[in-house]
Image (cartoon, rainbow, N blue to C red; front, top):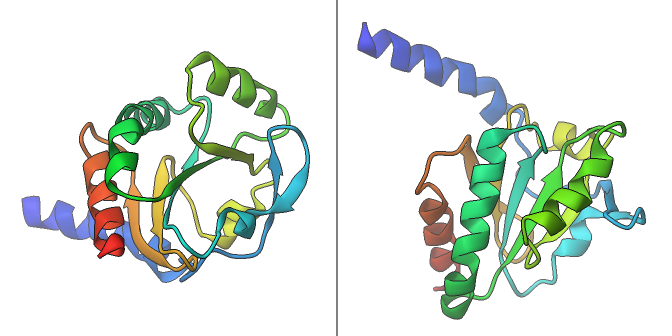
Length: 164
């Protein structure tokens, strides 16, 4: 019975994996100040990126971003990388993103809004949080779905591998 549920869970992930992009697409997103830019602008060609898709109503997302924020101060001493958070909140709720970011003191990341879901669709993001590790050129080297305490360490391990 346990094997059957594991197989069912794996089969549920097949569409996510089959439709996934291999690299960061050139899709327009909004910055928190309302300006539009390409998400590829987060790439500078020299540092890897942790790219987290989240929303203000997702409890697991808030836990993950909080954990990433707490760990970032230590991690940045060991590796050169960026954390980018893309809020999937639609136009009705995206006004909550900036106050939440400020109120929680999440000041070390770059934040973008994917109000119309173009980036989420292009990257086949179907659940929150979905987090990617991108190499310096924007190639996806790791994907993580959902959040459990401690799973942020796996993201950092992938960043360290890219530093070698």
